[in-house]
Length: 152
Image (cartoon, rainbow, N blue to C red; front, side, top):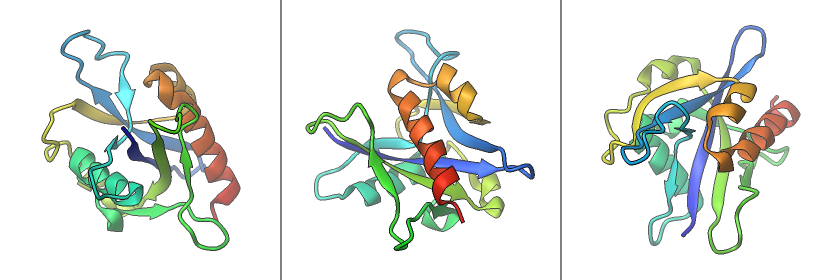
């Protein structure tokens, strides 16, 4: 099953990058302190990865496409990449987007129909590497590299 997500980031006044991460609720394994995720989920039948990622972001954190600015290449195309753990059958498409300053207050977990996250936080790359789900580590690394190389 394929999925899609958006690696949402912001920059502070010193150009330090932090990522929006969601603290997981894991009722079976009680891993709440060790499990963070990003807005992502499965691609529904008939849906492309772009629309799936936008839908998942809206469901999980209440943001819509007008609340973010996608990272784009020199041809103005939205930059996306597959998770390094994608295997051709199970692919995770990731896009990178900067949140607009006036949209930060709009983040909410109230719309999530699956009650899979207990809170959200902004964490830097090094913290994300240590607390996020194992398959996201390379995504944060790739995302930060893309931000540094493509942001205007």
